Image 1 (tube, one colour):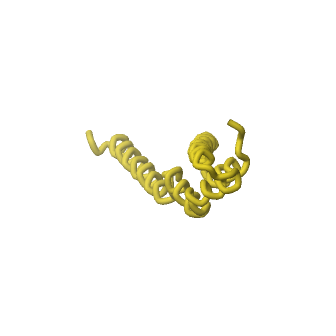
Image 2: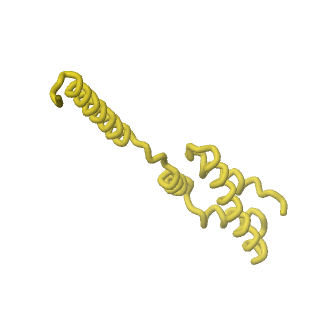
Image 3: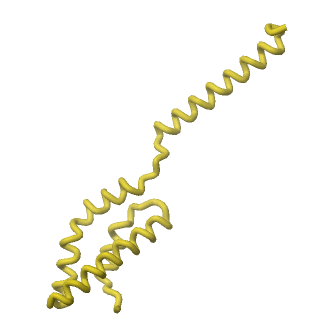
Length: 110
């Protein structure tokens, strides 16, 4: 099967905001494969190249909506709120350890 550059470009644009390179490459390949399968179906139904491409892209939907969905699916889960919580836990642990060391060395437990 010959590559369909319009569909490849659409798939590449759809995944451009996915941060992880491997996930971006895998997502692009999956979208492109789905578009190609649909393209073949449209050609088999009697549409010419331009009509088949247009229908495939139209059925896949607007790039903005697709990008948004992919961004949600591939978003990194480590948010600033998670970082703040982790920092609070580390500081709390250090305070606890230092308090215990102070208590032991100041003779409170003897």
